[in-house]
Length: 343
Ligand code: 13P
Ligand code: SF4
Image 1 (cartoon, helix red, strand yellow):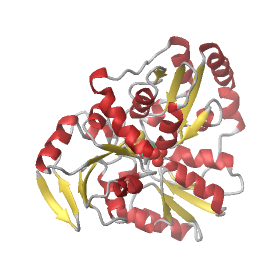
Image 2 (cartoon, rainbow, N blue to C red; image 1 turned 45 degrees about the vertical axis):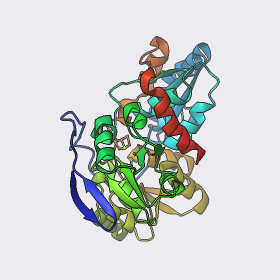
Image 3 (cartoon, helix red, strand yellow; image 1 turned 90 degrees about the vertical axis):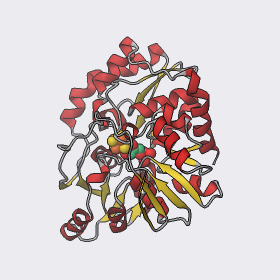
């Protein structure tokens, strides 16, 4: 199973990368262009759906939790709570409405259901997956445990409930370092994002046994692209998501979760910013911070893009698609997520 070991990082071979892993080699190519928030025409086109969704939320006793990668019509138009995966998990626990519409991807909806099982959780499009979640199975985790007895398994929330249930503790990009260090051990199995694990390994003395999964969006960014951007836009502040390869993170001024990048923009007041992450987020921040010029390193997540205003409206009208979690594994998975939230 072990294929290489580099400076405290052990890379395992992938035993079960599914043939159906939703890779999209034709994802939007990077463009270095100023980003604009939604224009008036787009808002006009969205107005009827926004009005209907606002009424449906009242009628159905529903709340919309939206990830930072949602398009502006959702993010600014109908979301009640926005944030990174950590914030959405935290907020899901406190929802009092009977229905949660998760405007994000499948693992986020599953996490909301785990943390607030009494609520009806709707995901507007079941095809909204994640290449990281598709890269690892519970059987892979068992094989890793067998190969590395006694080493705790730290699992990124971008995974299925079954994988969470096979893990000791979850993490997000916003708390991964804290979670790893909270364990007080000198070695962890960190799955499934090899780049997040490598980026965290660079900040801690803890050895990592890692899994060769990757985000199909962030793995495409290159250090050369960031350097070219800096040449084109001197003085630009570059923020990168830790799902990017380490050499990309090394070229950035700051690396953090989507919420941490958002907080950086709000607090540091840089005049020109490039976000090395999913492109919708730059447009959302451009709407919120008109004084900042945003330069696009534009790649879109095809899974996040499955969630549309019309899809949210249909979900509220029809009650589709309701997310359920297997009761046989829900308690174990919940424990791994709750351990993370307690750190
Ligand atoms: P965040 O937790 O930083 O929002 O990231 C989630 C994600 O899927 C990034 O690709
Ligand atoms: Fe998964 Fe990457 Fe899309 Fe995030 S951006 S949901 S990690 S494929």
